[in-house]
Image 1 (tube, rainbow, N blue to C red):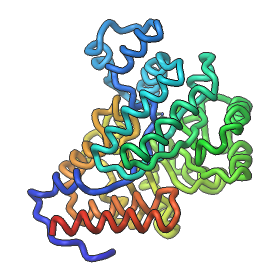
Image 2: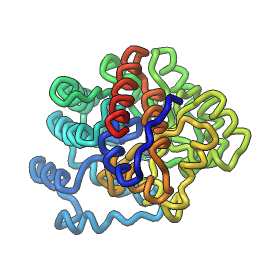
Image 3: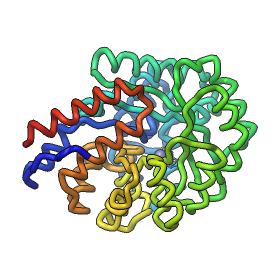
Image 4: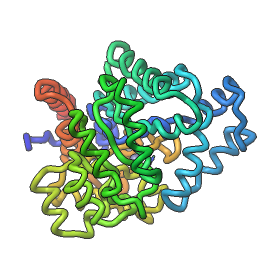
Length: 346
Ligand code: HPA
Ligand code: ZN
């Protein structure tokens, strides 16, 4: 690690805000704010079972992953036109810019939309156009990662991949999300093998609620490059050693883990333990419209609850660039900007 300037604790919130960072675990459908859900419902004449923004927000009290997913899929039902997907992604990208996110690798769930009769082309083109505009207009490098829904079948995942391959140039990788327990990574071994042949980057949610065995399988069977969440890995010392030695990134989402009751309190979160063990852990927002915060909210609340310091901030930002799917020159550019931001606080 390079020398981290001495930074007083009072200036930590400002540092966390101004620090350049990458976001690697954001479901774009999870960035859909209640206000935009209502606007799109009106625009598309879709009825939703809530009478107001306030009533919808009140329903955001979750007890586990599934209780969230039920509402999350209902919220996405208002997305029909290419412009809807653009508007959703653009709103997120503006928020990301405000949080000094230089790079965003954005998950999308095409099966949530194709199951309702929305064409793959509509989804991908709307999201991709927003990513292109973000580069020029916001200075945010944004790329897409297509996620397969693991509660659906292998055959449906293959069908989704077939529908997406004509747009191969518009996404950089694939992931695996939705209900984890009971849907181990092995179910998608052949789909991921095919994606690998296509030269796509591979990631998967594992060890959010599921056991360490799912993290092992994501690594050894799916051959993923990053683990999304992965916090349950701390229960398995041999796995922790593997993750540390191979610098396999974990895209950790503290406020998500709090809201979905993975940890009872933020102060109980194991982020510090993961960093102390030498893992390439990162901080991300997951589904910011549902979990109470975008990137900087995740940083500031987690730092407050765990008593983390400037050196952790530097490590987490550096990890986010190390873990991002960029070329070496781009990564060096991000790291230079990180160093410059810290210098300003020296
Ligand atoms: N876990 C699994 N699936 C998801 C999540 C998550 O945190 N967010 C959106 N889909
Ligand atoms: Zn997620």
